[in-house]
Image (tube, rainbow, N blue to C red; front, side, top):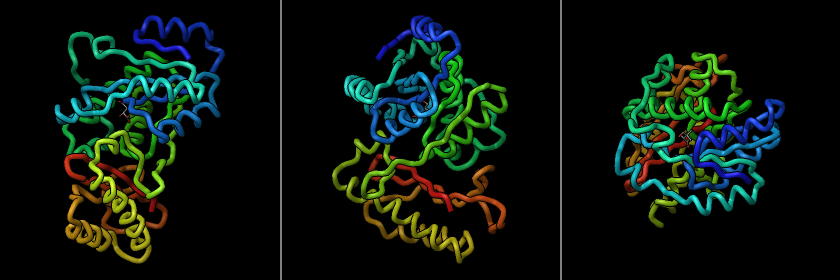
Length: 279
Ligand code: PAF
């Protein structure tokens, strides 16, 4: 496994493949877990070379303390990546990526950025767009893999490659869950024992909401979920929305030929968890 911290040496290495090998790219912020490994496995099925980036991107954090507390486990990440036969790791510094000015570019994603996470995390998707576009320009992959846990991010990245005519195939991968149903996330390691025990309630509730959606209007399902969380002593609901999978706009009523998803954000203490489910 080759590990690079700088762009020049990474690109020189990738050039040796002479454009005749396909590159599968898995961008991450490290603190790797089984969910990331499932993306890498998917990438290995379709690509000759798999590149994983590890970079805690400062511009996508809306709260400075969240950036400071984000788990950083590089040594362990490298061991894990070696064990799954990853070919290349790119772990740059912020200076290597941004130079002296750590700022986001401004993007429009045809309105996708104003829904859900966009309402609660100021500047988040400009930060994601900035880093993902930059990493795409550096690595120039054939395929790039993103988890559906961040479904809005996945749709936004698909929109970005479309709007900027970037020739990369974006592959969405199913949410990887703990045995008790909690969606895997690097942030889960920061949960207290008490909140970790409570957190599977999120997936349990959205699964029940999916059942209710079959026979009830969206509004009814939403107020049912809100009630459930109001009664919960440890978890605080930030939002629960039912939206069109493509536009991510919330819906008032169902249309048979559209596809919908329910999206949720919850605070477990100071840790913010998100999840979603196909309806
Ligand atoms: O999903 C993530 O881990 C990050 O948002 C990403 C795509 C690696 C960009 O920093």
